[in-house]
Image (tube, rainbow, N blue to C red; front, side, top):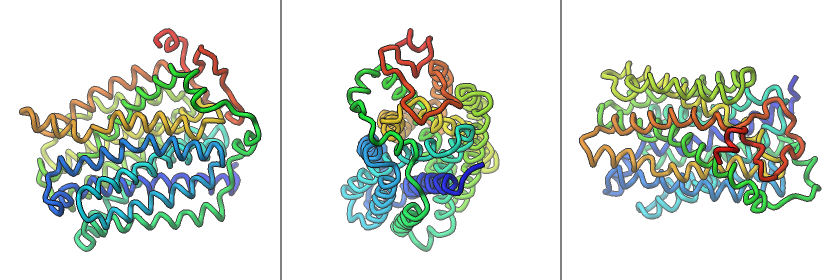
Length: 416
């Protein structure tokens, strides 16, 4: 049975990631309109997505280190305030340069939330529930996308793109809930007075496993952003659908994403993290023709629904997996850092896909299909080289940080 405090932790962390993602995904629906306001083109405005993604590792490092030192709870509150503030400021951007700067600052705040929230959650919930809660936590991302799609469909004509960003200040209210109802992580409190190895010393000693997870998370981020960031633009510019049709399709595929995260997160608790990720990733391959080359809105919606079951199914396992292999003294930092460094390396996704479409005879659909097809194969291959700590205690320092890199399987040790 879960305690009331554990439920509050789960709710707060889920909402934090949901509302953070809502702010990010508002952007993908209004690229064309921002370009018109600033007399630019979509490719130039899409650089703002790159700015946000590129700054997220810095946020993961800063907020993660603060959370490892001062506690998960207060830093999560600070993080929520920061991403809400920069979301609001986006609405008042006077020109494209300031728009890029504000979205980069938002990227710092966004980069910190996932690592801090997932550490607080995984350290607080029962071990047998980590797989399920991993899926719940990660489903906050498509839930934020779903809310952005709903807001775009229902309120865009009234609010415009600036009003859409102004709405993103609302998440700051979550701070009051966290302050009143969410306790500190028991694992952090247990280890608060323990002498800790420095982050840099630990990363240097474990550079092989760090590099491995950065590359793995790069593939994961190409999987997510390659199927999400330009999909509304693709529906608008190549399929010429109305904003209401685009919103409806986005709602459908984000429902699929939520189902995928919950389903495979739960499955991973029984069959293992690696097996769940392999199966989820491979689903994407036969779905690509429907997702990218469907001829009608219904076919595209079905393809996008199944694609996001695959993408977020694989992602739904990662909060538990990364937190389980991380030592307690770097748990708010390491998972978020490798995740966001992967984001940095995948930050060129939007411009890459647009460039492929513009500099060749390809359509945007073909460019997206190629990126997704590659990473849907890379992820299952790479994930087999990591070991699991499913069901083990994460309350104390689990790892011998010697050169054997115990986070990886024997095959991976030979590989790296």
